[in-house]
Image 1 (cartoon, rainbow, N blue to C red):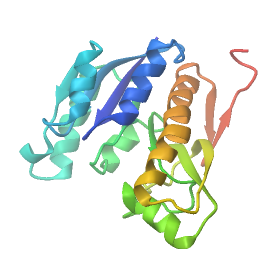
Image 2: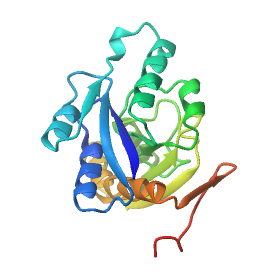
Image 3: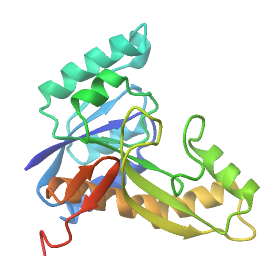
Image 4: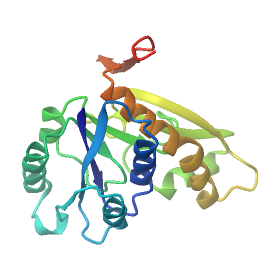
Amino acid sequence: MKNIIVLVSGGGTNLQALIDAQEREEIKNGKITCVISSNPKAYALKRAEIHGIPSKILNRKEYQNNQDYTKALLKLLESEKADLIVLAGFMIILDQALIQVYENKIINVHPSLIPSFCGDGFYGLHVHEKALEKGVKLTGATVHFVNEICDGGAIILQKAVAVENDDTPEILQKRVMEQAEWKILPKAVSLFCEDRLTVIGNHAYIDYQKGN
């Protein structure tokens, strides 16, 4: 059984999707054993409490720079015996030192079909604003491994979502979360915990035979 550590900073809607999937027994061979928040006021902490999941606060404001914060986070992840780290609205750019220690063991969900609308500056509503400005007919979400390049790690799963004529960024954001993010993030977590993912170069391959 793998230890899943979820890193959060805000409301925790993606954390909730993971908790719901876990309670439906959709995450195989893994369990959320700790939620770590960079923000002591994050509602995600309340979600963890409601469901009896231990949580820790590592307040980014208490550290001078990202390097010091990363050292503290590394120590905490080691103490929690992290097998998989999931970024669920974690608003801190991870330092390279942490990414190297947990190579291909950190996953993130991004609200677009990478390589569209991704990279530096593309987060939250801004992603959906840009998608609407471009006039795309399809957008969606991507779950990927985290590497040193922002949104540049190996893609695990993607799911497309239709863009409607009267969409606002807020409406589109909600649809992408409900129809894509909340579905493929738990699925990717389970695939990892079932040892059904292999990364070669910058490609993630799914073993469709294992587990069937």
